[in-house]
Amino acid sequence: MSVVFQAFKESALRFSDKTAIISGDNTTSYQTLLELSELWSDKLSHLAAPNLAKVAFLAEEALNTAALSLAVAKISATCIPTNPQLTATQLIDGWHATDVNIVLFEPEFSNKIKQCQTLTSNQNIEFIGIDDLSTLEIKNADSSKKPLTQFSNIKTANDNFIITLSSGSTGLPKPIAISQQCKLLRAQQSWQLYNITSEDSILCASPFFHSLGQRLFFVPLLLGATLVQLKQFTPQAWIAAVERFKVSKVISVSSHLYALKDELLSNATQLSSLKTIVTSSAPIDNHFKEQLFQSIGCDFHEMYGATEVATATNLFPEYSQQKHTTVGSPCPNVSIKILSDDKTELPADHIGEIAVKSPLVFNEYYQKDELTKAAFSQDYFLTGDLGKIGSDGFLSYVGRKKDIIISGGINIYPKDIETALTQHSSLKELAVIGVDDEFLGEVILAICVLEDENRSQNETIEASEKLKQIERELRRLANKNLAPFQRPLKYYFNKSLPLTASGKISKLELRAHYNKLGEDWSAPLRAMLYR
Amino acid sequence: MTSTLTNKVQQFIIEYIEDNTALDNVTVNEASNFVNEQLLDSFATLSMIMTLESEFSIKLSTAELTDEKMRVVGFLAESVARKISA
Image 1 (cartoon, rainbow over the protein chains, first blue to last red):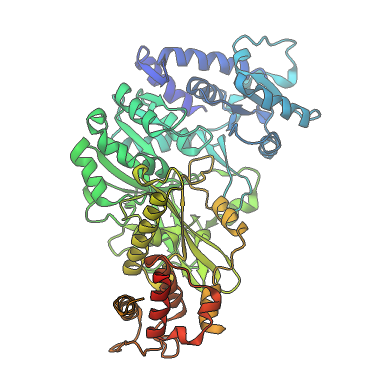
Image 2 (cartoon, each protein chain N blue to C red):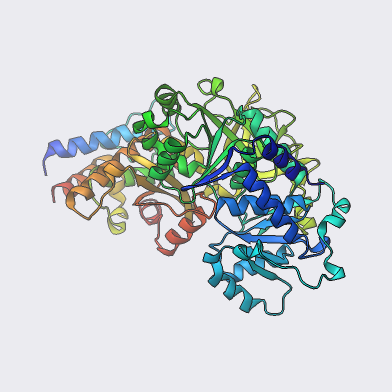
């Protein structure tokens, strides 16, 4: 039962002449998107038997991505959106882990596909250029590859529709499988939380292989709203797209909002169409949110969630003053508990693992029964995040369970330090990490990116003095607001921070880089105390 | 090196210790030994060294820090002031 396609088709028939997708200078109407997705679903239905219908795609164009995913939905098959930046070996590993048998690719990824083909000469994957799909002729129909539509009744709305390959904090692939019914419910949740209607234009600056990117496709397209795709994020391109296409709603990763912080205020007049910005756990201060509201008239929602359970909590604008240190209260029908290490429920204001029970829960980690089982305590999904619930029911996010720094035997939460230091007006971005130290276990480093006017473009004495002054100010801020065990030992100033494919700061990469320096970080302390 | 500079550094160290000590009603002066008197824990001590280096743009070497007298406020202040003037 293809509930996603049905919802899309209803919108497409109702809003047939309306613009469904804008990407660069290209616009696509709902009617065109419907026709293309129906044509491609017909082609796909002849390519594989239903139990093997796992379709991966390497695609960046919004039209291709939307039409392919809707075509897959129509025939109740499974799609596996894949990050084209992966190496050929990584791609093949991910596709084998999800039993992919059809790979569709845009022409610009032809070379990558050639590399994949050499690795899979004996494997059962069919590679088809997206440009060739429309004209693909189905020859010698084979009984084992009957049109999928003949078998669609054996699939239900709860079968796997999309498998998102998440790297997880351990670096091992976690194929997160979600049904069509769940995708539709998740879209409906966003419509309700953020008052999204068919009148809205929604900006998508996240890739489709990331769960946020998928959300930003289905939320507008299943409702009859307009999807505005930004293939390459830069603050300037973001501002230009919002202004040109009158974008009204934005759901953004925190790293994008960091980068946009100044631009939003200085370009307020161009952004008057913006009604709502949603972000996840971005340490953007309340004063800034207020300035945004004053200058643009734009609401600011902060949410907390995970690919496995969608949005779990939301901080509505009316609570942004009073509850700004929290990520809001549970969404309708969602229940949250804070659990200790032995999985017992902790009382209010105690820090533990955030566990979420939601009707929007994922199906499984694909073919990883043990991993799926281990991800739950009773019906509650174990997020791997730390937090606490106040007696008022509002959730505070503390950090990733595995992002804890343990220094001198004390658990230290980087987010506390990041929140304290980002008060400094010269900081654009900040990552606090722990690096290995033989004496203390780990020591704390602060990796800072400065606002443009403070960034040293060269190694002049003046620039160096400026950095020293900023470091002094940061240390004063830390000395004033943080306990001694929370204060960074060293401050580094970089031009940018490494990002993961989904746009989050890669602390894994930062840790690897600074560990490689091989510094004896605690030598001054040992010299002074234990000579 | 001027005594004014030493006094300035010394005052900075005293204020740092007063702000960061876990002890109540403690008097910090130039003769205070912040290690032996347990005025600062190890994190606060490390943070103080880093703060002094940053605040006064100096570098205290491991060899210099091994001198037991560096645990005394007055001596530490003189050492830092000497480096600032160098």
